[in-house]
Image 1 (cartoon, rainbow, N blue to C red):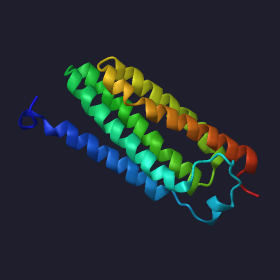
Image 2 (cartoon, rainbow, N blue to C red; image 1 turned 90 degrees about the vertical axis):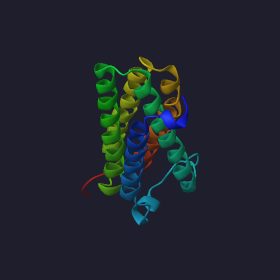
Image 3 (cartoon, helix red, strand yellow; image 1 turned 60 degrees about the vertical axis):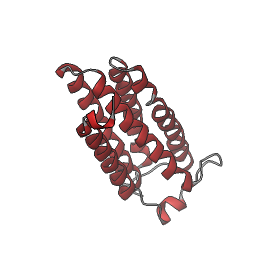
Image 4 (cartoon, one colour; image 1 turned 30 degrees about the vertical axis):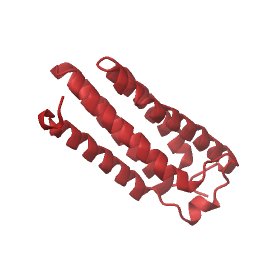
Length: 164
């Protein structure tokens, strides 16, 4: 398919949503005194690595969405894709709000399990229409798995959280 025959709307929507989710998560992520005061495991990736990793993941997710959208034009499949991506976007943003703004890594640990499951569901829904689209989401699943283990380590090293 030549670029002049592409339907640019799915590309624009996927890119726009990826940018909104990334910016919202970034705005909610405050690396300040509270965060720096937390004990973190020695194996935690450096803070500077998170931006490029998330940029790659959001890019792959947007490409996956477009590939899956274009792979099957049925209303049922597209509705399932939209629902899966919407739930995932909300959970992605919510984690940053819970961990950084609410300063509740313990609650964020429970939420990251839901986020990981939402990525798994996203892969299953995408796989029904596109193997490539599903494969593009595997780095996201892996990274959130690592983030969940990191979140758990932070809870174990610093808990309990909440009112003193």
